[in-house]
Length: 419
Image (cartoon, rainbow, N blue to C red):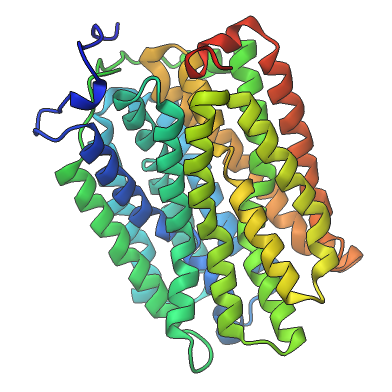
């Protein structure tokens, strides 16, 4: 049972440490932003590792996929054990961020070869499974009517953090190839700082404070309810596109700039901007969804990003227009992300919100393994102009799911009745 609603604004509520809602959400966003800088630290340095280690196309894909696999394994274990609902989520987040930072740093410190790097990237993903889902649970403990905006802030922080390795690449590569060890070590330091911030500055809010008993069956029940299942299907369509786009579009931009004789440093900044602009998309979409409805905002985002999938390859020979399109794509591709999570948190048993969100992210990241690996394989057959067309499948499925969910009576549970 949730505690009774307080009198007055929930913004006035304070945690046991004396910090209010705004301060807790701010420090939570800072913590997740810093921790998630680890995610693409391996992907961002693929050109450097390819030059130094002679990576094959498959090994290049595995530098991103290893993190996804680790995340799925960590999320499965976390969901089966109900960890986000049995352990204070701020402590789980802090410990996971510190452990992920240590695993990533070992790539720089230990034997330097691709097998060791892949194993440690996988371990990094395992620990990152304890960062994002507990972060969403923490938002739910502070937000009710504005939950879409709250999770949007978190997704915005995650998005900007995911872009940071590309910014570090640009900062260290002015005179040539960026220093990959500096990028990897730098993101590890940032993630460790994020864990410290979560431990010292973040605490649970007044809602959903009760820790749930262990129930291994809930992991299955979270998928049997039709409204929740539709929200998860929308998320799966979104994830089919998102991480393949984040992983390969910055490299696509590098190739386009290089072929046109443009600055590679500018290309790296364009890659950073393409991902980072999604932070604004997530926040603005969260604000709109709380007022206009989750399914409406998610559907609009899916339609725009799906169109970008179809158009990006056609602009490969024109880096300027391609960059503008990628910025629009980066804004739209993650704008809907928070709304799938907010929808699940509103539609599921409140005692097991953390577990339900972990299951959702687990399934989503499992699916990304296929789309990330598919892009370089498909490129060999259809070329760069057509390679991103396959990603449009995700927005089509997601759009159908959201429109179907919108028509169900249970959809009124979302966004204070705004569906």
